[in-house]
Length: 92
Image (cartoon, rainbow, N blue to C red; front, side):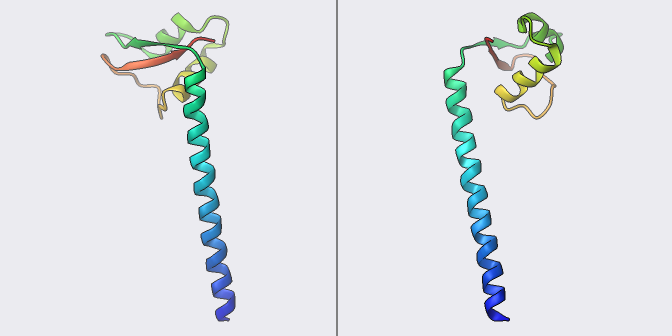
């Protein structure tokens, strides 16, 4: 019984370590990706929304897709933007 508990705890610890390493590698990859993609920085002005910002810069990309790209590029959990904040807009 004691060996089973040790085996289960060891498995859980190894699983958590693997997840931590994978997460760290993904964050590093995302930072490198941001460095390689060209972008412009804009300052959010009064009345700006993610919809209006994406409309200005999206080119031929579907608007909802470009909004998602901006969110991911700026690590934004939602689409709310605040006047005076800075956004990186990828040039695609």
